[in-house]
Each structure stands twice: as structure tokens, then as C-alpha cells.
Length: 196
Image 1 (cartoon, rainbow, N blue to C red):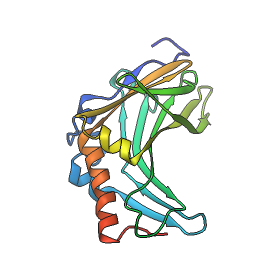
Image 2 (image 1 turned 180 degrees about the horizontal axis):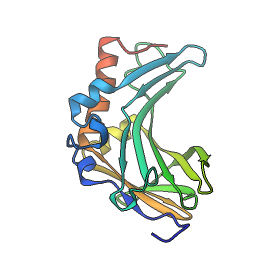
Image 3 (image 1 turned 180 degrees about the vertical axis):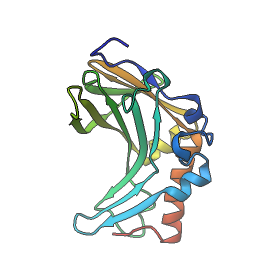
Image 4 (image 1 turned 60 degrees about the vertical axis):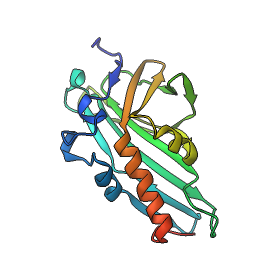
């Protein structure tokens, strides 16, 4: 990797396939992901949130301390909707976080199978313990629940996130998406999920 440049990075096979070798024994099967989804409810702003487990891995070509970490999770958000007609979370965001000692990637767009998806910049941070600073960028790929259900048919849900100085490929196994949707559906069906 050239100094000062963000490189292209992609999801290792162990994460794509949803096998137990995912970093730090994170949930990979449908049932493990389903069990790890958490729900919160904020009455003050009228929002319910379903948060999938965080999946974290280092790209094998960039395994230098924290440089190259990619972290993803699914988040379902419902704001201001209540009543018997509400059966699912209306908005979904695939949150992706990458850290690098190189230049800011400045992510701007997300693509999957030729389709462009809305990308939201969520946060960025700089940590300088030495003269070399770790830059962390968090973005969200914005979807609806209905669109996520359509995309869940794919064996691997793959997105290329493109920036001004780099890109990354994030591949989410079908088991992760299925587990997240199953947890949301079960919470709604059983009335155990947080309600407005």
C-alpha cells in the first residue's frame, strides 16, 4: 500500500460466508444474529431502534494494528409511527465503519449490482497517539425495510462504498440479514418489541 493513500479493501471469505471464524467469535448464523439483535425505545423523540450485532474484521492486506478495520451492523429505525398498523421498522441503515492511518477516504456513494444507494455520513474521528493519526469514518447505507427484504434474497449482500481517495467492498452474509429481519418480525408479532 502506498503511503498516505487509502486502498481498496474487501470482506474476507470467513465473514462473507457467515462461518464461525468471524473475528472474535461474533454471531454469524441466522439464529445467533437473531438472538443478538437489541431493541431500544426513546419516548422523548418517539423512536424505536433495532440494532444488529457488530461484525468486525481486519482486511488481511492491511493487518497493521487498527489500520484497515471494517465494522458493519444493521440498524432499523422507526420514528413517530405507532398503532396496530405498524408491523416493521420503516428505515434501515447499514452502518459501516473503517479506520485507516492513510488519507481520509471521504466516502460519497454506495453501489450494489449496478444500483446506487443513498449514503449518509454519520461520524468521523481522529486519534493521534503518535505522529501517525488513526482516522475513522462511519457511513450509513440507507434502505427501507421492504428493500432490505428484497435484497435479503441474495446469497451475499455486497456493496462497494466509493470515496474520493479510496473504496471498500462490504459483503454481508444472507444469514446476517435473515437473522436481523427475523428478530424484528418476531418482536413485532409477539408485541415484545418496544412500542411508541
